[in-house]
Length: 83
Image (tube, rainbow, N blue to C red; front, side, top):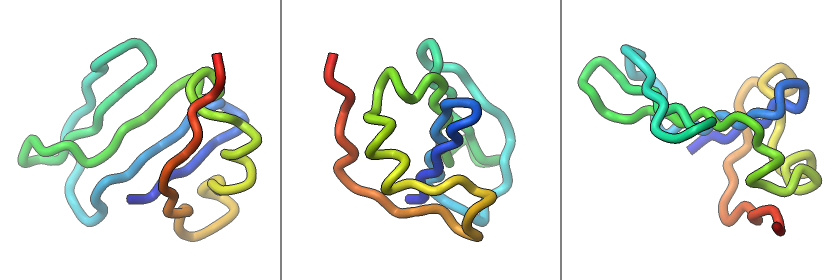
């Protein structure tokens, strides 16, 4: 899984599988959008207002913007932002 953080839009893009053909997206919860391939399988998740869910300091240290690297950073166990 590839995870990318875009600080300018405060959004996170999680790509589950590459090499599949995008078909459509569906909002499943406010700020959470699932991308589906042409076979109807989830291929990614877009998260708006990421700083409300994740620690931005952690994202800055461990996840890279698409324009900085050819591929995103693979991450596990991202800390959830304290309430």
